[in-house]
Image (cartoon, rainbow, N blue to C red):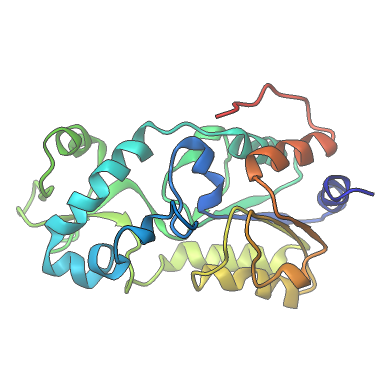
Length: 257
């Protein structure tokens, strides 16, 4: 049995399967990942200087100058074949939840229903003083066109996007739900994640301790390669549609971006 058929067999036989996804899911949608040699975003800047809560509070303009071109990519990006295949597998009942480290919202755009965003998202921003929350769509166009630092309409202080920066705690309710699905699952599909950022990177270990079997699809090796039943060092945009079709889901004309 080849690895695609083996992965499909595990998902077809699962009682409760979950997917854990990372930045590699979205590179075919034009969103760079963080750690790939030669193209990762952290090769260009020090994340602690631009993407930590301490740096944000000290000099928010540095954060917004850095995230502005990325925000434009995130807001205009469209789901690729990996997102669509995963949504299709969820709709067909082969995957019960998607736990994602991504902030781009592409899983939802692709049609996934149960998406747990453990690193937050860009749909809302919260004032760092009065803690009121606002939809970012009311600020997005002006920010992309003019730059600058968005301010709270209520008190005038700085608005921080609801993404998790270095030094911040992950959203407790979302993380508890992700851990619940992880403890409950008997198969975990890890797709496009280097598994280098804790605590999300600990979820496959937790699943394995509970007896779950692992399917790993990622270009680079990870720390759980030797614990997984299926390991595919390949592009998720190529592999996930093949797994979806091997599960017997209807054939779709996937986007080839």
